[in-house]
Length: 396
Ligand code: SR1
Ligand code: MG
Image (cartoon, rainbow, N blue to C red):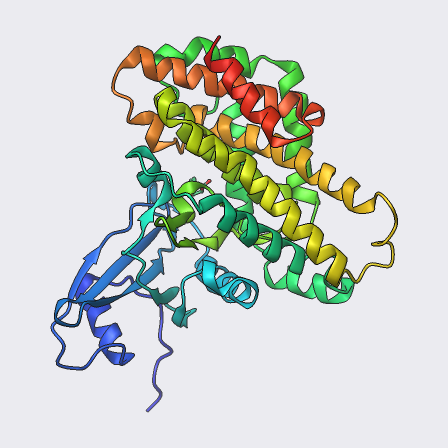
């Protein structure tokens, strides 16, 4: 008798529990509770807990399509492999900032990992007034260590190219190319523009100066294979408390420009700051300057201690690289802001502003900043200037 090969099946809450027991992550007779808690755009997430033992696990499963759209938009299951491999890779450099992986199954596109429910998703926490005092220190270190370690400054070119092949992620990159870099800047059917914002959107779509610079940034994203990126490092991809920070969800990981992850973190923190009353903003503006400062300190130390590039000691080369990374990060922050205002996937903290006129002003200010970051990215020298730009925009 020949046994048929296992094939993909979407989990249910019942089969997720059965899997957890088969994997011996709980005793066979344990009383378990399972809830599907996924609220992202793409995947299913099951949280399984054993209340008697006060412990739990997460089972994440990729669907063979985009969850928010449905079966009409197929999407590679390989993203689950990319995600778990990226988490394992990051764990080599910053184990303290990623969840532990217990098990992966490429056929079922499953990753079983540490339950982080003692932490909150940063976007949600920021919207309800949390400040996460260590967030930018941890993320700055996460970024510097993961990005340096996978760059040409820490790896021989041949090894780097092999790693880049492993993280060849064309379908997920295409989502970013379309939904971050392209569609929000055109009158595209997938955009979500509220009627009151339409006149501003139309100005954006006709702004030739902006479109030219946006095109250059998209090309940089596509062509600059500088380091292994998380690829979608917005504040919904980070769990935190006042003491702890964990980066999740690197299914968009690929070899890209170092400034991209930094830009996404800055953009989403800035959007949360804009969504707040002025009195609550400073703690978030601190994260924008601090993430860059910590990144620079950590990256520079690694450069001095571990650089394998012959040109590394040449006077001015590190400063040149940091300036180029910062310029990219500012531009990418602008692209991310634009897509959160005009594109398909919005920032929930801004959408939660109930009063129409207030929400419109916040979106208008965000769009002005996004445009400025894209067009004038080469004029920005440091993150304090980004914060000043925000303050100028909100004070009119
Ligand atoms: C159609 S998917 C849109 C967004 O969802 C993911 O979370 C990524 O941010 C992607 O850009
Ligand atoms: Mg995600």
